[in-house]
Length: 332
Image (tube, rainbow, N blue to C red; front, side, top):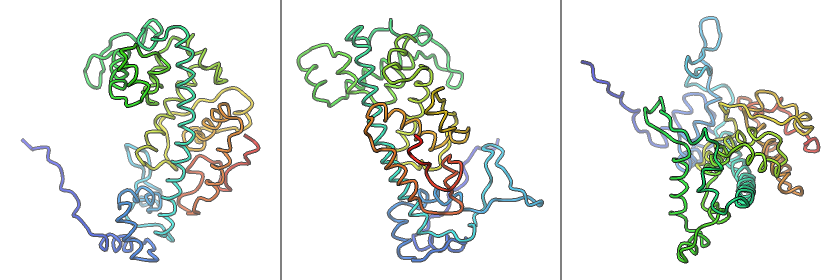
């Protein structure tokens, strides 16, 4: 019997060797000492995600790019395209960092506001509504077997256990006070322990009539649209919180839009709705609804327009229709 053993890892290389490796593959290194310093600060493989699009595409004998059978993305050679500069890759990394911080700024505002709206609307019906399954869609309370894990699951039970754990671990003064005084924790206090994932899942489980009340407060005419938005915003939030590259990331799911003038004017295509540009448009719709005087979009547009110009890393990779820059914000 052949054992299913792992192939050995690549050998360790020091920073000087890594710089030499990049140079041997065609990357321009203007300052090798700075390159070694940046590799030590950021890490070779973290930076490799930023220079990956700049690697040559593997081609067949006809000169056509070969796609990976699983990802359907072009297979890359180890060599770089002409003109790829290490310093510009570092600038792209710093651009992505600034973009993540701006996204977190908007996500914080969206999360806190929706948390407040959910607590207010549901707390009106029952201060302990988050413990009461009568507000939950009956389908979400069904027990079912997960085909992937072969485990018996129940979304409401799982969410309730997670919610209890969040309250147990919470260090918020308001929750600690309720515990110390042995008082039941009302909805508007309990949500202070929630994260965006917990909020998103709770909303997705609510009966439609309660979802509609929440959507009405946000100017959203379709409760399923908000569910999808929250899911995708939570994914973005997690990527930002874990310092993961976002500038050219593509989602598996297309963001839905509402049949309103705001989205009709933007004319977002399928590519935009799976990439950063579409997410920016969705989040600006929510941020503007929460704070009409916000200058968040202006700040985002200035940052996008400051992105380092690298041929193999164009703005179209963010979902923009061309590489001329961020669209006129007066059209939003």
